[in-house]
Image 1: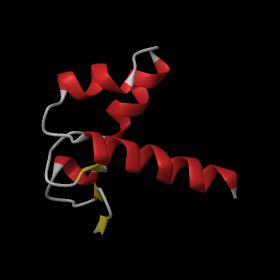
Image 2 (image 1 turned 120 degrees about the vertical axis):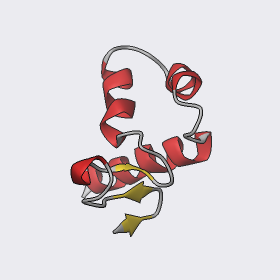
Image 3 (image 1 turned 90 degrees about the vertical axis):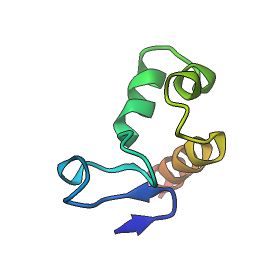
Length: 67
């Protein structure tokens, strides 16, 4: 299933939510932020993820947590 910039598919990374079109787990973005890194560091380390996708995922999480 594709949810905007997130893809969940049992055939990709055993169903781990990843950035659509990549094999980069969404969790990696949150791990970077939790570790004190900023989004630029994450994007430098995972060039297949666009800034637009990373920000969209953060906005989605923000929206879900505000309800």
